Image (cartoon, rainbow, N blue to C red):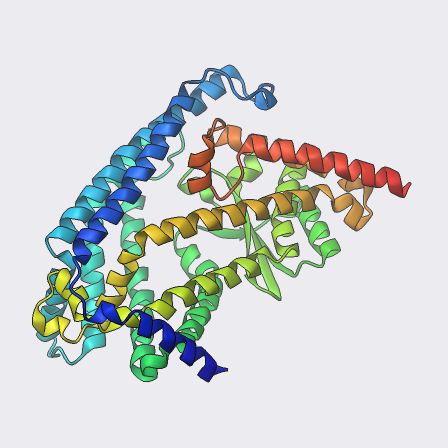
Length: 466
């Protein structure tokens, strides 16, 4: 099996042999591609922008939105769109300047100087790669800090969502950097070690390494990382806990813990989700969702989430991500030993003659920018299909479980979705192309329309059974 895989990979590399020999203006190509994606995203925002001038919600939502609430939603959406347009162009301009003037080559040089002060030479490629990666991350992230400050303390504050203090903001920032180093350094060392150990046959071994890392993070993030930012407390005994535990038991969902998270510590936005390994799942509900919705509506939201589990959506998304990763890694060897690629990005001959793996990989990833945009659209389409399936699952719970108490689950889910949109001041007028590119969920009107169809189909099925 491995020999067949390697033969296929060799054939791909033979077709891409020109990458290692031909002199191509890769920097110009990347500038054109990145600006094209940025300008397309700006165009989508301009398509969306006129919809914020509408004075009434879609007819299906008219009874759910008070005039003043809809006006606030439109103003919030317009302010976010303006911010996204300006920040997107600003970030692209900064990235373009960094690209043009060789930030990556400069960062590699600085990484070498850092390890030299520690007594290590350029032969310690993995050590220099770690120093390079964090230098590049730190320098490239600095220009976006003012945007984060503005978004949190001006935009979100203006519309009543921000609950974060300046001290908490700075604390979170330094925590994120520290966690990035503690996890990122060993990950990068392991990532590069696979290349050194496996040589040209790294693809299956690197995929195994990345899959193990993903599974490890599934356990570490909620149990170790998230508690550094939020407090997870057992959901108190009561109507809501009883409803969720009963539903999980009936569906044989392997629920181990049921948490309430203090999301209100940072924002008024609300959500609920589950995580964990196949045999041990944990459900997390934001305290804001509990305050904003009735227990039966929160139960409906969780019924939707359990629909994702029932239909194996996380597993399917994981499989798709593995296919995506395999495709990326299968094409990478052609760029791994390509001196012209590094020379195009201002690396000196002493470095480009034997390209460092991390540098070649990052440049390769950047070159994939337009393709990744297309992949993102496709993944959004898959995700929206899964959302519809999860909604239908909630509606059909009465039939699946033979429980009359679930007969109004579709109505409850509809009310919960409307409440979430109202409380979060979510946009309800959405351009179709903007939505296809950006949204992993159907719009509220699309979901409510689909829910009505599912409820009608479920009612017809019930009548036939009678």
